[in-house]
Amino acid sequence: MTQIISVVNQKGGVGKTTTTVSIAAYIGKKRKKVLLIDLDPQGNATSGLGIDKGEIENSTYDVMVNELPIKEAIFESSAKNVDICPTNINLAGAEVELVGAMSREQILKNAIDEVVDDYDYIIIDCPPSLGILTINALTASNNLIIPIQGEYYALEGLSQLVDTVNKIKRKLNKNLNILGVVLTMFDKRTQLTKQVKEEVENYFGDKVFKTVIPRNVRLAEAPSHGLAICDYDANSKGGKAYESLANEVLKRTK
Image (cartoon, rainbow, N blue to C red; front, side, top):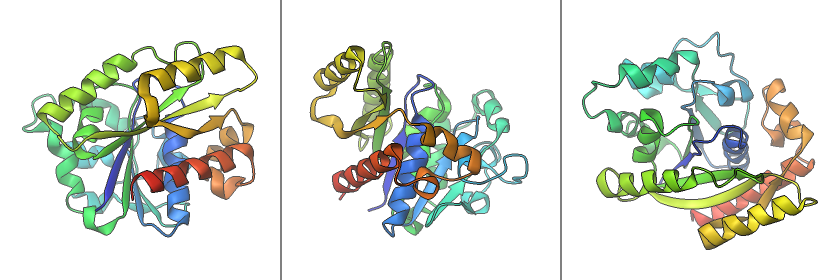
């Protein structure tokens, strides 16, 4: 069965896109066929995998708003075995334009149904909000990954996210599960980071991935080259951490 995974946290700046791109690329290296759907209007996953946001003709916006078949908005990315449905700033208007749409929570799911048999993994980079785009992603997914930064406000808003997940599970998608929670931007030298890790483990229990993602300058540099970390510097601390995380994801989704 194809694994459809949303990477979601309504808080911005938690390493969500880096996590999405890195997991997709490392899974692609394992000879799995991957589709990354960029559902964040900022389009960082798009540019981070070598696609020029200013040059794309068909995008996630056209799939969501104009009912374009998703096959017409899928392109090869810079990562091996990873295709991408890219986006640009046009998607920012989708929240308003979809207000009156029929079955608006199911639009992405219906689009994915057209290509679901073509991929082993479909990974969705969600926007930093709990609006209609994120609801579409969660309705279409069977799993979600929550990146949490190892900082003071890490758990702020997480109860709202969990409430939203539970509501979607009850009303729209009974198959939705939290695959795991990953700590990002982790600095093991600070007492605060250790406290956050303890709080996250108390809250989520064995849902927390064993791998933690450190702060690493190479992770920050990779997107400017249009490359995932495994193609930019796989031997960096960030590269090795994301390879370990991808292996955990593969193990949990067997």
